[in-house]
Length: 297
Image (cartoon, rainbow, N blue to C red; front, side, top):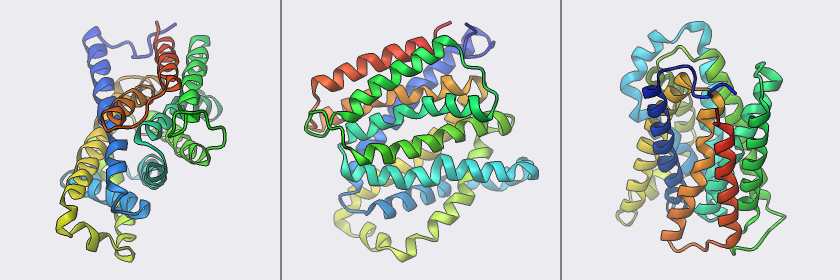
């Protein structure tokens, strides 16, 4: 099987794995931040503020980005921003208000499944046998985690899991769109232009909420810190790095970060006092083996 990292030199392969681990830590911690923030902000307020502030952080590069991004590709940038950032931000804010952060983090693990399925159906992606087996194992492990409720018992009627999967379905389209249509655009300018557009849309929502009143209260200063970290580091910076990873690897390799996110999210949840059951550990083990098969030469 051809190496999924691409035919680049070994040093670039090490960089790709380093980025993958870095992103898994950053995004895995996002769900703990969300859990802390939704105590004060509503899911709509959090989703809109996260996207808007991420756009603000990237604003210094947006002007040049508008010059760099080809005009004929703006429609793909808008679609990427909406499917990869705007809509999922609201969805995971709601999911994070209903589930433990460790469980919410596991729901990202279905992304590579949709990357492959959507890639095969709409983007002429060739799927190998090892990839299929790895994806199925990864999904099985993720399913064990998803079905493990907040109390550590299996819960086969979890509507928020299905809601989160609608976001990972969008992620699947976004990864393929970037890989096929936006691969040659500098990741910093691509991300800044995308957030300039969706960030403006998110800002238009905030005046109709109590966001500005809540966030400026002295007792909510720590929540503001969490929000700034979530928007500046876990969203804008992480997405610039992820877009770069997509350019030097394959969509499947880059999206496999979502298999490692649950491990970090679960560890963070454990440190925060959340219940971690045997089902969780079983799910993590199966998921990691799936990651190994997906990226096996």
